[in-house]
Image (cartoon, rainbow, N blue to C red; front, side):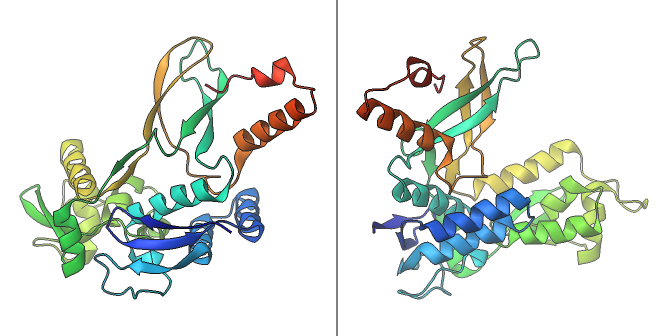
Length: 283
């Protein structure tokens, strides 16, 4: 069984073993049922495949040899670990096929687009000042709307915080996403922060402008590291280029791309290669 040490954006190093069929079962069942707990299933699979901590990096709550605590670690670490785990778990694990649809109104063609997870993705280390802040347990700061806003790194548990907020504020998705990262806003009580973000239903706060909200999101992004999931594809039918994000779902499963290549290899060995099958557009 293959094992490999992954160096994560935060500088922590974790040793992993490849995925077993038992873990594939967990994720396949979660995706089939469309369970909202798929995020926790991912963490469960990462924990199962993690052999142990080799270097704790900035995390003082990790001990060498023990299992990672994904809920308290940077989400960038978690996502990169998931990508690298796929790479070592399958024969062609570094190749991921995204199912895309051309956004051009006159086209709409659906096609597969192959991504080499080792060479096509930009990997950005966590900034040194962010590593230091995580090590010291300090929040980050930015001034928005003349108030100092203190916020945290996006952590494994941030998604749960966001979902809990959304249950209370169903029609305030954008504000919930920002609030899930905010620790404190200068001059405000915790229960006032949501209304400061989007105005709420009262008249005490006007709410942030879109420009202020974008500045806050940029401040969030600047402290992160990890994998840039923004990619570009070219439609094989209309030849137009368009941007898309690396899909999250199915990342830890073999996927149709690997299955297709296995079929093609088997047919070639049998001398029954199908020209149609071998020329299926997967650019």
